[in-house]
Length: 87
Image 1 (spheres, one colour):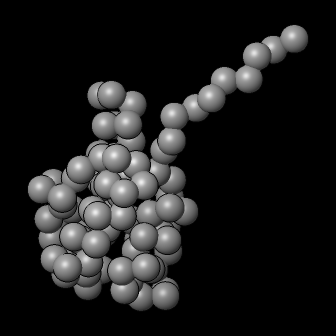
Image 2 (cartoon, rainbow, N blue to C red; image 1 turned 135 degrees about the vertical axis):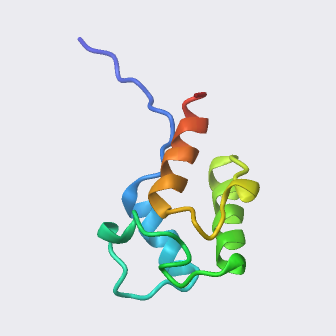
């Protein structure tokens, strides 16, 4: 009999896409856009703050000071998941 293990929460591509759309990213944004910067996606500092706030509320990870216009959603996902894993 195998034991079930509980995995730590992770920020997935779908979660990132949901966050982007919730803060005003174009409906045409897809997971393929996650490598583009927030600036390229047309998301301003208020949108980045909102993403950081939602991540802190859901995952307990504070990344507000780490998100800039040049940061990409993929970079945010890696940062959050690294901190959740204790890296």
